[in-house]
Every structure is written in structure tokens, then in C-alpha cells.
Image (cartoon, rainbow, N blue to C red; front, side, top):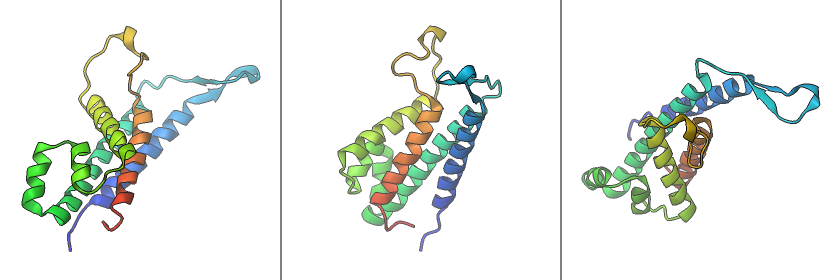
Length: 158
């Protein structure tokens, strides 16, 4: 039997995502006079953004832990440690039996979004909103859905 905080990492990610959504929804009010759309209030404390970052970070921690548990079980500790240091997520998954192209594509998106948001590089204000801009709230939702899809592939892991 192996001790793991796997479920705690997932719970932290899910709870942070719930808080992010709650803060985001609280900032939106319907436009006056029945117009379609919403007015979004400025949140100078960036509460939704902060909670999204926590969700993304813990989704990554969860994925690392899950792959470590599965990899150690299926490949042995020594081989998994070697693979872990030399490969990214989407290279590890096929080695652990996950071959679904959509999961591998989603894995790449998760890894890239996580890296972009956790290791931010400054961008010009004029480029905000341009194609390729990442929104933490969107990526947090995507990340939680992605890690759960990986979890389902390893249904025997606690």
C-alpha cells in the first residue's frame, strides 16, 4: 500500500476553481434595459485570477503525482524516475498506456498553458486579447477537465 496526497491535490484544484467561478460570476451583472450581455466590474484584487492560478498549479501537482504513482506501479521506480526526468507529460502518457490522440493533444495544451501562466513573460498591453492569449479562468476549467480524463484512464489508481 502506498500513501499519497493525490486526492488532496485534486480537492484543492477543484475548490480553487469553484472560488474562481464564484468571484467571476459575482463581478458580472446583466446590462441595463434588457440588453444582451453583461457588465463586468473591475476586481482590483484579481480574486478570480488568483484562484484560477491555484487551480492550475494544483492540477499540475495532481497530474505529476498521478503519473508518478502509475509509472512506479507499471514500470518500476528506477525506470519511471529516468523517464520522469527526460520526458514531458504527453511523452509519458503513451509510455503508461494512454494512446488517445485527444487526451495527448489536451495534455499538450494543459502543459503549455500551465507553463505560460506559471512562468509569465511580460506582454505589451496592445497584444492583450490577441489570438493565443491565455485566460487563467478558461485554462483552469480546461485543466481540471483534462486531469480528470487522465484519471479515468487509470481507474485502478486510488
